[in-house]
Length: 240
Image 1 (cartoon, rainbow, N blue to C red):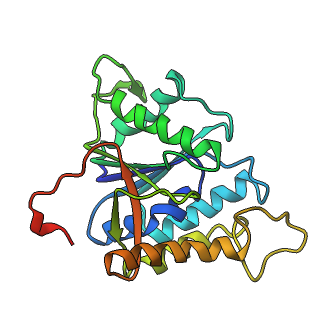
Image 2 (image 1 turned 90 degrees about the vertical axis):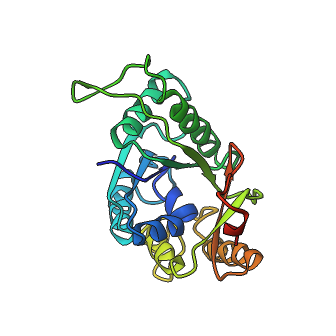
Image 3 (image 1 turned 60 degrees about the vertical axis):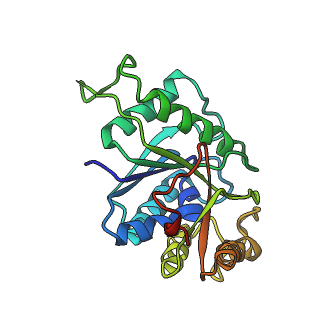
């Protein structure tokens, strides 16, 4: 299956928190969209890797993703090296996405910035034909995505552009709530450890950010991105 967009996250739930509104909007427009999780989030203080697998599957149904894969890299300890790059290259060449969305370029969690650079490097290297990869014993053809964009996570990074997600924020928040072990819930289990993302303030902040970015461009909700290259438009009249 060829994808229009492949969103890559260091952990299950990175995508839902940061760019799920954009993905839901593109899926509704008929685009083929997939997600690649680099780790299973096994170092998380709440839940378990097995439960996170189930939560990610539920979130995928809510968003209507066409495919979701997990590379099973070591949470907290994966590296930006040839071994890890080639595993991502295999996925890029398998699905041939036009656009790749990846982690924030800098963030509180070390895996986010690390995953951002790893994914970006893999996107470039995937276009070099002398780098050989095989999938199920079959040699893959080189493929380089046309665009690589970085979503925004914990830190308030100034976006290079924002996407109107009005009408799709409810789907985004429903996909976030699929991770019942990770985020605030009125039905939370007593005795679970509290983390920076498990309190109500963090949960509410997801909406605050979307509403504030929307306010800045004159819509209800929006998501922001940074880009490695200038964003080009066909005509100045296409700008909102």
